[in-house]
Length: 243
Image 1 (cartoon, rainbow, N blue to C red):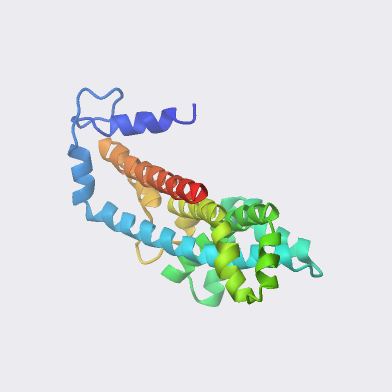
Image 2 (cartoon, one colour):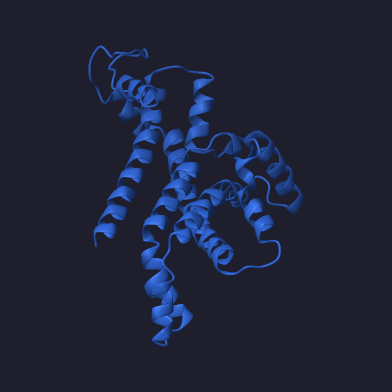
């Protein structure tokens, strides 16, 4: 049931005709070529990939530091901080987008790429913190203590023991962050800048005025990128666990 809509969209994108229909009357890459030739969609795809990559990198760095601090250092208000980091999951995206838009106007970052990046960081960070916190609960700290008993510094222990053993969790967090950013629509609508919009928002705008197989081809590109990310992460995580 979950895969059926995606299968229909991908199958309909290969139709040779001018009307979006399923099953397609034939097979053609015509509409994928149209997507490739469209500066509108290719520009949005480039923006989405750049935004998702930066969001993933920043959320991994910040999320790892936050999860590590919450797991290793008991301090007053720790549960409040944990709940605060996860709070974007509880707030409706429309409300969050409207609030972020007003906040960015207040600090002078409205209608900028930095503002859009901050918005995506807000919605991706909870997934990273939650995933890494779960990984650290299962972490065997005896390995770290053994390394420190051999006079390894905390930095060396972190680099050679902690991070390598958390690679599967880091890869899972990376997938969550990338997919969340790349596929986001609601928040990106509020934070678009200078006429530049992400690919999902561009698809939404195009569907409001047109309904042809080009929409299915662009949607299939989004599906392909998402599936490729998950598949690559699964392969990397699997090979690491075997080693």
